[in-house]
Length: 216
Ligand code: G3P
Image (cartoon, rainbow, N blue to C red; front, side, top):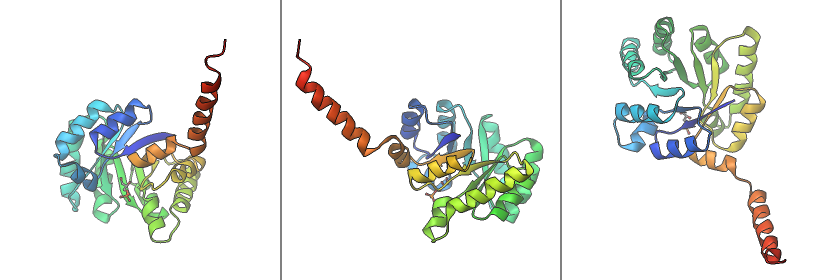
């Protein structure tokens, strides 16, 4: 299972990359907007740090506009994956891009039917947003289970990126379901490393060692 980091913050990307938990990066317009730098500048910085797929999202809502942006992003670096929303126009663009060999991550997936259409049109990745489904009292991980079952039934090559991750349990459940990738925000990466009993155990070992460390 691959871990991507769901941020456009360069310091966080460098920090977690050094910890060996960054196989790729996902960004979106909201994450770029938080950084106060141009999309092109930031994406070109990210590809220098992480040697893996870097998702960069189109802004256009019509297929022609999406194609123009997608081709421009793909020309920046071989590892760029173009993120396209799950809309009718998005699917038109996907069909063309997949024939051109440009990898597409279909984003804003909220149903298994959408994931099936994206796979049939040649998506390299789909991003079901589990946290946003949980937010409206639906079951985000049940959607991932449906998609893994469907893709397994038909041997689709489309990879599943579990996105909109809200807590470490989403990541663990994604792994148990065999999802290919989880894209994880920085604060959840931190939580994945930690357990209170680990901290308590380290403190207890150090305290006990203090009592005997000077014995001959
Ligand atoms: O990268 C897209 C996705 O992970 C967004 O998550 O937290 O805005 O629902 P969130």
